[in-house]
Image 1 (cartoon, rainbow, N blue to C red):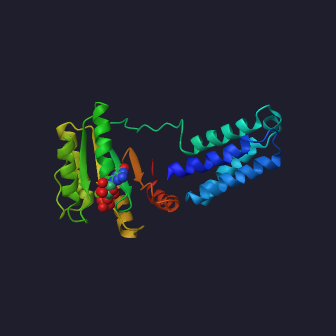
Image 2 (spheres, rainbow, N blue to C red):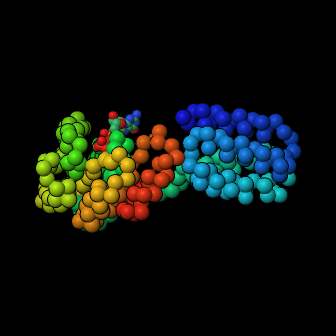
Image 3 (cartoon, protein in one colour):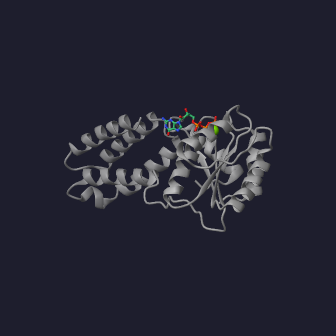
Length: 244
Ligand SMILES: Nc1nc2c(ncn2[C@@H]2O[C@H](COP(=O)(O)OP(=O)(O)OP(=O)(O)O)[C@@H](O)[C@H]2O)c(=O)[nH]1
Ligand SMILES: [Mg+2]
């Protein structure tokens, strides 16, 4: 997906470079093409609108157009703003300060990659010299708990022993006490997936949040979801105030 996106952007840039002097109209035309490329790549239209507005504001200024290399400048602005859009330079490490065990909660739609991300996160934390405990809190999908246990065995990270007949909030609470007693400093909660925004499950996530007060609530999305990811993330954010 990103390959064709960057190829298409390159094509727009090449056309721009082919000109000597640039008029405001040239720049606006090029940005219109950038806008189309992003929309074709299924980037959310509001995100595209804000992006193009930000670039236009910077790119049609007198300084850029009068410079010796206006095309280069415009391209640089587009690249800068794309980087910003992707979160470049933002603090992206987890906030894990506080009295251990601190809690990281993962949530997202069914099959988004929550369980896989739990495993990756646990490995990262271990590299950072932390001692994480994975907590299976999905009691709905058959074999979900077993999946996390298997993953834990593969990467040699401990998994809290929960059972599918338990209440997810109780599992998380018990796991927190267990972690405290056994020297784990970080709980990673693998919560249940949902096909779409579902009030009942969302309420359950709210209860887990209230009971454990996670340091981080991370939303996991499938990179192929396209622009609907923004809407889904927003719905989760409204209920849970996501941290990442
Ligand atoms: N290509 C690719 N596949 C992934 C990635 N992360 C997860 N998957 C695959 O996506 C599928 C679903 O991943 P899970 O981690 O089980 O997703 P989940 O959100 O826990 O799913 P539920 O528990 O059913 O809601 C699995 O087949 C994973 O192997 C990724 O980063 N890249
Ligand atoms: Mg899962």
